[in-house]
Image 1 (cartoon, rainbow over the protein chains, first blue to last red):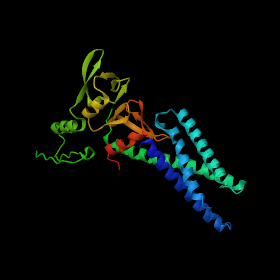
Image 2: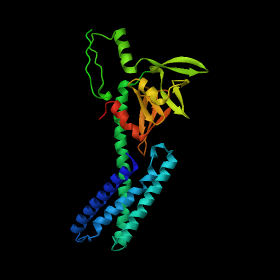
Image 3: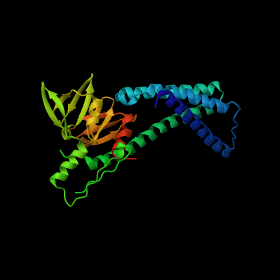
Image 4: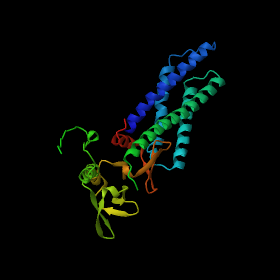
Length: 142
Length: 145
């Protein structure tokens, strides 16, 4: 997949994920007695944040070529870059009503980031199992 | 023995089924030919040319426009480029990175690493890296959906 297509796909995925999490948060808040009301500009700012968040993907290009140290260093920079974009966008687009909402956005961000990596690694582990059992049937004897 | 040929549209769909009473020497050599192609490639070591059987090759690597063929304990050079060898090798040879082709039958196991790449441990204990973008090809070659 070329980098433009990758950025576009990720933009859409991130925007959808933010809308999804906001939706869940709104449902939870409603049953807790606090209704969340979206402003007219909120949906478009979410899409714009999705596009901005997809840009640091360039940092992870050819990640499979790096050694472990470089990989984790780049992932950390990627995570921080996304955090700055998300919290910065929240500040510019006035998503936060108080410090509490800023903290909850920060917590949600790190949970989602870790979840995406864990899910992706879990899927890779499933592939690992499938490949190993297929290799068992064709392996040469030494 | 009656032999039947049926055309398919994709290389991944190619397969041969031999129905026989027992595995005779002829059948074993037919299986070897079908699985490993014409049998080998020409390689060079210390200015001498050898014939290296495909069943002996662990992996083939391209370094600085030179192609190296690795067996259990030896390293040879090949005059062919990696993409040229790809055509000649059997169905169990698959590209695992831009510069490497591995013999799937020589892989002891693979393990997934964070970032999507995999590490393959070969039967001789060597470890080679499978790039994320080639994992799909390996799965297809092994008939995994």
